[in-house]
Length: 168
Image 1: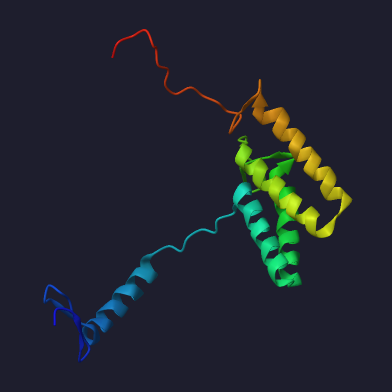
Image 2: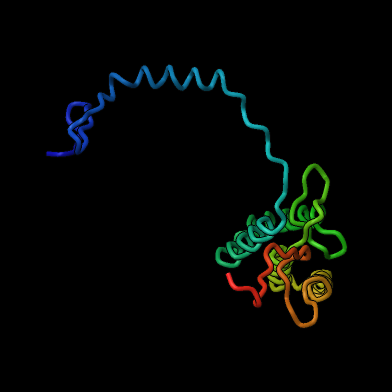
């Protein structure tokens, strides 16, 4: 038998083995030492708007499938919080950190916001949501569509330019 467990010993295909019972105290000591030396991580307070709006949509889908009001309440709470922290006049900012908006806006984040608002409207039929939906659509049209071309973000930078006349 190339691999298996017998009498608390794990045998691997290479015929090496680890005595779990003998190693456990060592592993416990190592874990205690690491946890006593390691600085605990700092709480991550940034808000990535698109991912949160996508999660709102997921919660709304859970509500539609289960009819459990808890999902609707959680989605509503998160939707309002993200709107407050990451949206300014229908412009969705990618990230909010300690109450500051980072000046980066992408089509993706706007689409996730639009999708969450549409899903809410389909469930609640609230007139305010219809106004929000129109505002988001107008912002997308104004910000990301130029001369019939849809851009993914507003900070277009050319990284490489190829000259067709040169031979490489």
